[in-house]
Length: 428
Image (cartoon, rainbow, N blue to C red):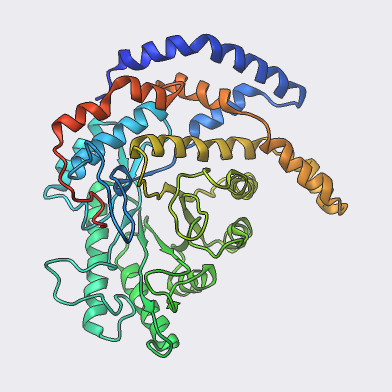
């Protein structure tokens, strides 16, 4: 099922095709002089995929206000409709990551069939113990998996196990766990005890995982706990994953680090010891801004993929989970997610262009100028024709945002979805 009429996409592509053919041929000649086959690069671009966040298709918010947009999805089925549009046009987002209880279906089988009819599948499941729900017995105000109360911890464990059981019915293969547990005042929390509680809780959840599932532990430097956060950095995440089990891995959110932290080195370290499980892609200026991927520091995104491609070329079994995790406060979420998917795909393609033999030679001969110049040579090349050709051949749009606007999808759903003023993500 196509949410946007195929003839709209075909008409768009027909108008764009002559320019694309010329640009693709010119880039092919340039790459050939470097010994790179553009067709091989395009096939690689076609294999790249990143999951969509179900909550990302709704308008986000801040601590101060939220400004709803027209035609926001009101339930998980409408979210899947919007995700289907993104994949139809970008051809790079075939899976959706659900957040429970925000996306809890009454009938998992019906939800699975609805997704499959829209050419979508489900990626990692996300639990939520950072909010209180109307039907829960105990509050998470002072923690969840790390709470001093065993009853609260057990409630949080049982929620995660419930998410796993739902994910099994939907075909998911991973559980992502992020908690906001921590403290806001010195002395409020016993550091060692809280971490010990987390480890015990994580092991209990891990024991409920199917044998073919992974458990992804997400760290965050601060917020909502501003004095201390239990899983605040990659070191804590690594330690917890190592202590929990072989299939318990660390998840890296690009916005969850202190300014100027070398995220690409963190990626390398976690992978080196077999604990890099996945990514939440976004961008950041100050903190956990959840901005569109590549909007602030596309070079950092490229450097992350430089490490990922290097690892993957050494280990073909290396396959971390890739997902966008963004908040769209002033843009159309569908447009932002299509833009971001292309930016992440672009970083991947550029990383494939790095001359790794030359780079290793410059590293071994201690030639820093030429080493960084080798990376910049790949980064500075415009690979847009490769991305466009990959999309067109897969049935997507050469220019997804232009095709989306021409379809008037947003105007159409705005008529069918009255503005509720509520967030589809459960956030203010």
